[in-house]
Length: 135
Image 1 (spheres, one colour):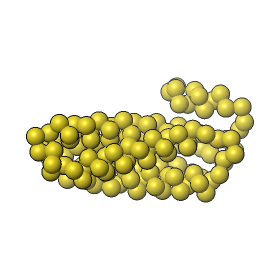
Image 2 (image 1 turned 135 degrees about the horizontal axis):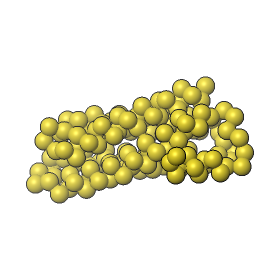
Image 3 (image 1 turned 180 degrees about the horizontal axis):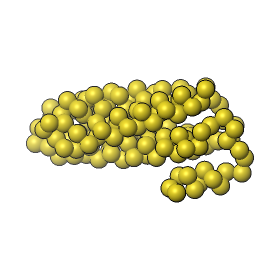
Image 4 (image 1 turned 30 degrees about the horizontal axis):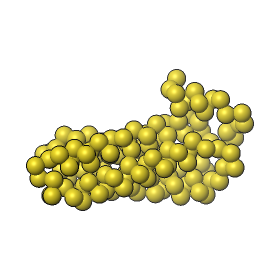
């Protein structure tokens, strides 16, 4: 059992309207994506052609911030608001799509971009899966 799942298990109330497996997967995907996007931006800055990667760096950092925020919002359950959660997930999925698309453009030249594109796609899917589970 992951630390995220263990922590969710300690919550004293029930998760009546949320699939905890999908919630756990989404939180984990958001946290991982934030880390990978941050690392990708840093790696882009170290490339000899960093000036050609300005858009990628910007989108990486934006996606990292949004994923981190989504992971934090999804970790809070007291006073749960489904509409706000759905909005955060939609935004996170959109950021992951944009970042995944941009990093995919550089994937053949930069392994860090290939990895980032893959992780962004996984996070985007986890957000969509959780949105579908919210009903």
